[in-house]
Image (cartoon, helix red, strand yellow):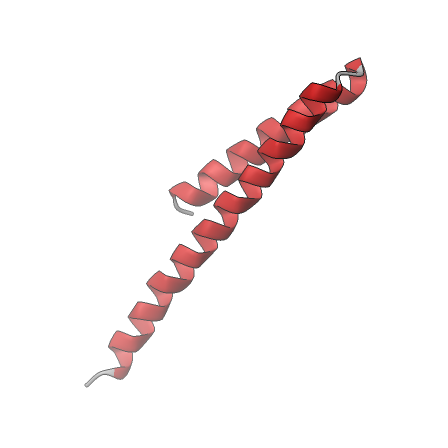
Length: 66
């Protein structure tokens, strides 16, 4: 797990908390912030997945070379 995956998990957790608290208190602004944080978390996860794929892809190419 790299830095992007950790950032993603943190943002998603923070967003889930804000969304839940906003829902319980009726604060639509807080709910919106929570949803935005969840989206940021997903974006960080995707970025981490792309980095992982690039890293593993470069290793595979090196293995194919004599």
